[in-house]
Image 1 (cartoon, rainbow, N blue to C red):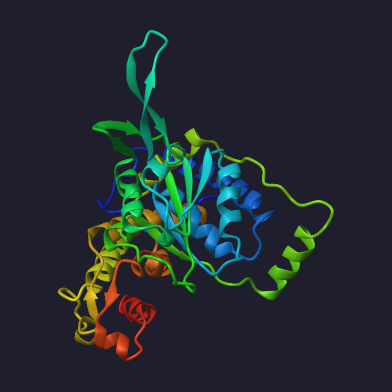
Image 2: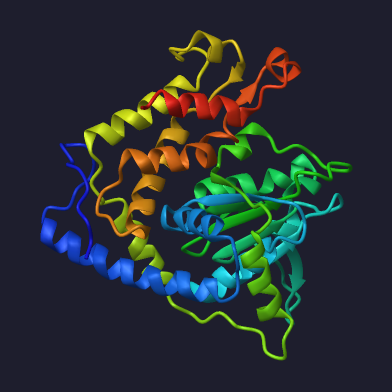
Length: 342
């Protein structure tokens, strides 16, 4: 049964029929349980990573997966494409990759009658789940080709606008260690990612289970547990989840305190070069709702805000030179900001 947590006093888009909303959330919770079970057959020891990636998709956003090679980032995206029933494609970003290689281009064709006309050939971005592998290896010009697609869910080629399939999500990967031959992602593009998901090494028990499951004669395969239309319906339902005034206030306090102009903590304000904009608060609002549903609750709590603070904020804020020289990390600043929420 869904646990009703907290109260929602005029805060957000609640359903007119609470009983119907509870029934819908319970049904969605059962489907999401099957989704997590199917993903868990293939991905071992990355429960938090899987949770945050599902939160991103349920919120209708894009995710930046950051981790060293060999931790299953590509496998995770392929598995999610199968489990969610989405048309998934992969693009390996390289320094010589051009924008047309992603969004597509127009070619001049001549008919049998001798008439010439341009025909648009869609690129790999015309899918439902796009994996941008090692996105920071492409030039800024190519990276920006994704910007309109990620924000507007359409691309413009030769003056013609082409809508993308729905749903459309980008899961980009980035290697945090090997930076030779890479280009930093511009702040405007980073802000388009709902969450930055850090992928770390699995614990010993999970790695043992992975060895046994992946080196035998048979390897487990994911099974489809959701469809594209069901994911779109789930995204609409997430936006109807009520949010209490206490959670709303916590989101605003956290995001605004991460800005040097608004932070009530002078020590923190002196360390920040720039902070998150309103899109961060929107991302946190949607992500807390999705996390509540994944956890079997009808409304988000302060715990959800604290759990998602780092994935939402760490790619939307930067330290100044003096703070970096003193060895301060963005994660340290976020932990201090979270402590202020009590």
